[in-house]
Image 1 (spheres, one colour):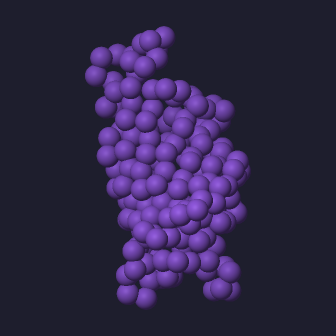
Image 2: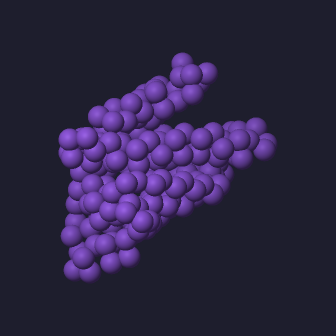
Image 3: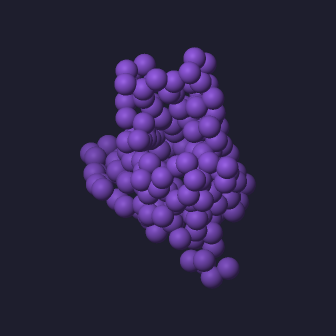
Length: 176
């Protein structure tokens, strides 16, 4: 299932890009849906790109109220691997969701665009659910699109909030 998010910010794209690449775990204080983000590794490549791996621990605040009692926080864990490339002002990423194992393919790209005095972050992503990859999982026929919509319904607000958190962190740095 395809999803797209746009976020306009009153800061230059380089400033947002660098905040995303270098200070993302510190942005958690602005994201009630996330308990923690810990950087697992960082690699600088000869082409100038940087690959960062993070482990996320979500909070139940990310889950719709109706489902919170059904979803243990241990399931709200995911890892991302993101390649930041300043030559193209993009970051390409994949997510691994241990609770879904091989059944989930999640990937996307952020594009950082100049927009007047500020910038725009455009994100395109895909979440594909493949229950057939885990034969031990039995789901009702036709449930795959429902599950995809539900998971994307969790992902999109979190991505939107992460963009807002970057802007808020920069605003605080500037003393505004």
